[in-house]
Each structure stands twice: as structure tokens, then as C-alpha cells.
Image (cartoon, rainbow, N blue to C red):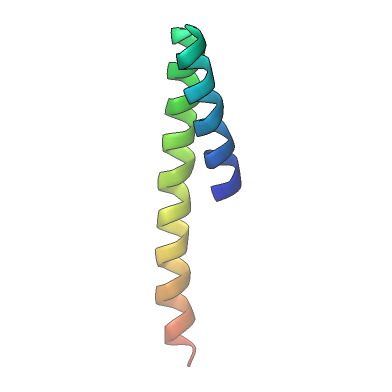
Length: 53
């Protein structure tokens, strides 16, 4: 999931440089959402992974 958010971030940067503002905004928004989901899942896996020890 982190890989997808990095790919979408790169797409957003390239689209922004080339002047495609709508595409850049959409890709950046999707990348941001995926990044937050990744962070939440990472923290949950840390919490529940430690409780099994």
C-alpha cells in the first residue's frame, strides 16, 4: 500500500509540473488517503504484534 501511495505521489508531481492541475490534485488526494491507511494499519500491527509476545 505504501508503494501505491508513493507511485501516486510521483504521478501527482509529474502531472503538476506538466500543468495538469486536476489530475495532480486527484492523484495527490488518493496518495494521501492511502498513506494514512498505511500508517493506521502499521500502528495496529505494531500494537497487536507486541501483545502476542
